Length: 283
Length: 203
Image (cartoon, rainbow over all chains, first blue to last red; front, side, top):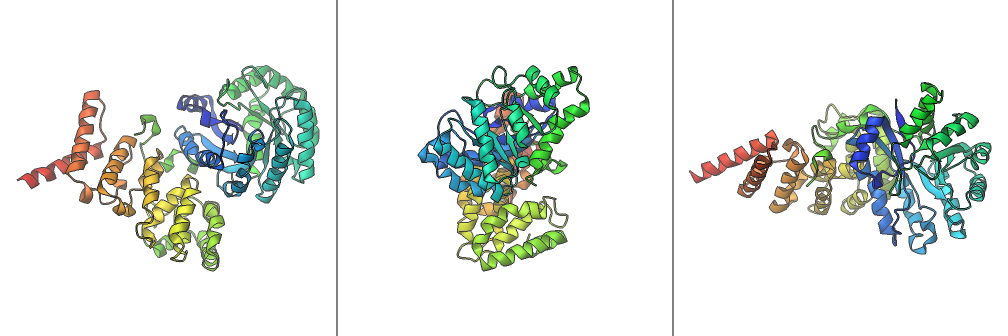
């Protein structure tokens, strides 16, 4: 059992979560840059956050034998704040980092002109830095937001196989499948998608080009819902190989398009000095 | 470890990439901003047999920094650290003793010691830590004990260890004993050596 969570916001989680995830089989993950709940008011606030995504958080993850990667972007919601527009100028520096494997989360929140400008500009950054792109779909007016996202992706010229459209449901999955983009699903305790609904979608649409994540963050969420979905897949007649495709080989194939995925043995806690650990508590 | 020893310790493919990158930096020092983050992808991250304690990416990055002209090296090292991921930050810290920058790199050590990342704290206590004042250095040594870092990473430990560090270690040993928690053997060893030195001085 090996699980790669392709979308989870570990900044918002505790070491208990890392410990339970590792025990449940999570061996690698991608943490997309996103909104922190409290709106940010300056570019510096973003760069400190991005620095944590390529510095402190991979270190925390390594304590539990979990390989941490990130995606970096100006998220749709904060793209509407003119005080944050300068974030676009600092992105190229971060997109060159070893563990940054995509541009994201980009896309729409309220489908404003400002969001669309940032969305299109960041798809161009993905092309320029030879990275895949992670596209968030809006919670409100989702079906039309998804269609419009696919249109912006097509207009950008990025290859659809290098784009995942995330947070899909029964209503939006078919459009995304038809577009050639990857289909992403966020399993939540009571909103976006649940394990039983996910299993039904996998039965109908198959296991190819699908990314299933927990998207666990600071809201009500559960980092073990990847594992819960695995268990339900197996109980519903899917094979071990189906599970390995959805929860390991698919994310490896998608993010591997960055050329920067590092899953070999030299990534784990051995880089640390022997015997030390943040488990002991710092000073 | 001298720069030419680091270069010689790199695998041949990495030497080729580093030489090419050094040439680019000598022509255009600003090119280091793009080349520095790419060094690990180009040279790998393997430990170097002929440069104990160094990895290929750290050695390559040190050689890139070493190629910078004297008037920009301090400023570039600062920027590369500020905007670096954890591996890049560590590489800048490792390279500091090789650069002719006087005390200009001291703020980077302060930043690294403030973190809770053992790789950065450890890298801040190499030979360049000679520039740290005694109070900061003692706090950093004690932080290593707290974080479980082996004290063998601290440059000139016994030479710099003093009565004040002994008092601090003895205080920690007392707290640990009261809590029924062990203190690392190397910290106890240091405490014993410092106590022995103090006794000899008294006698």
